[in-house]
Amino acid sequence: MYCHHCQRSFAEDAIYCSQCGKKLLQHNITGIQKVGIWPDEVSEISVDEHAAAKVGLHHVPSDDKKNTAMKHGKSNFALKATVGFIVLFAIISGLLFHFYKVELDINEEVLSLQSMAKVEALAGNYEESLGLLQDAIKLRPNFAALTQDESIVYHAIRIARMCDELEAIIGQGKEGEAESKLEELRQELKGYKEPVFNKHRERLEELNMKFTVLSLTNELSRLGTIEDLGNLLNVANGLVGEEAAVLKEQIIDRIRTTTTAEVNKLIERKRYTNALSVIDEALGWVRGDEKLIALKGNINDLQSAYAKAEEERIKQAMEEAAAEDYINQTAAVKLLDYDQGLNEMGELVVVAHLKNVATRAIYNVSLKYNIISDQGTVLKSGEVGVTPDYVASGEGMSFTIVLEDDFVFGQDFKLEIAEGIWSLE
Image (cartoon, rainbow, N blue to C red; front, side):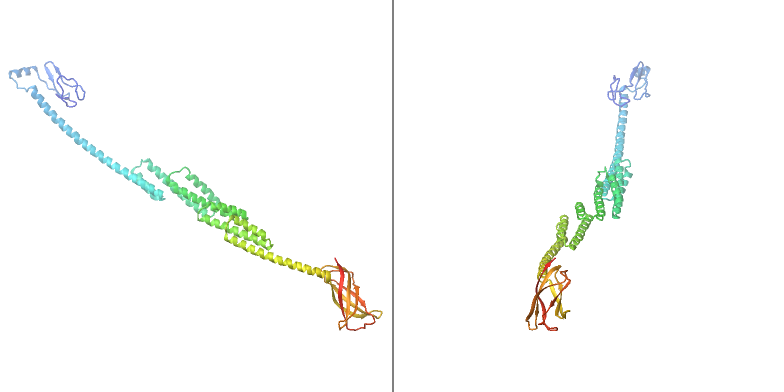
């Protein structure tokens, strides 16, 4: 006998199936026996038929033959069901494997596109990266990581454009606008730690450097002292890049020109020591600058030449002063000319005209004179005063000598001043 649920055989006295545990449908009724697998399959055998079988009136198969036939039919059904189940399982498994394989290939393609997109983004090829991500999103629209990557690439493109705009503004020298844009760019990058933004952070540093150079360049035009220029140079020395190098050279050149201008003014006033101090101050900011060192050498040469010339001048001045003093002391009175004449008394007189050649006024002048003949014989000597008594430098004076009867009008002789004494003012 077989269970109509699981088609497993069971004992005649069993009430529940030992395999599936469900209640069996076989039971005995007086005079009638019902046997079947499904509830509607019932075979009825009457008591009369049973008796007739015994007396040979009817040929009815025995129970063993019936059971053997039933078992054989049930066995064929179970085999077919098992084979069908296996075939169905194989088909379903094949379909599931095919679906899994297709989905796996799609996932691999999506991951490959995402990986290539990241490589392009890191290389700065944002448009290519964006195209790869959009292809991946078409394959996996609900993959959140792809939409996040797409958003990051869009932001990277935005920041790259902002960087380009800022660089153009700096190039135009618009310091105020550049400062505002620089702060805006900092805010846009704030909080983004992804590797794709590393290039943007590097570029931000470069643009910040360029802005600093622009700011210092504008400040350079407003500075005028060596100290201010030196402090600006110290700031510029902390910068790197071609623009910073150009700025540093501009500052150094301004230090040179400013130093040279101040030195030239001091040289005009012969203040060589002060000029050397200015150069030393400039060299304190730009140590070893060849042009400033050469300028210092020129100033030292000028100072040496000036010192030598000054020494000569002083020496000459001293000599001139000594000569002047000698003149003032010994030769203040110079005889210009003299005339012969007769006075009211008919006496022969000599009127001499003199000049004060001293550098100072003289007074209380007393002169000794000689009258010498043509042969060099002293004919007369004497001492005489002059008028006026006070004679300023460069002014004239005179005196008159009355000659005795030994001299005649028109006689040839010469008047000379032998010596004199006077007082200097």
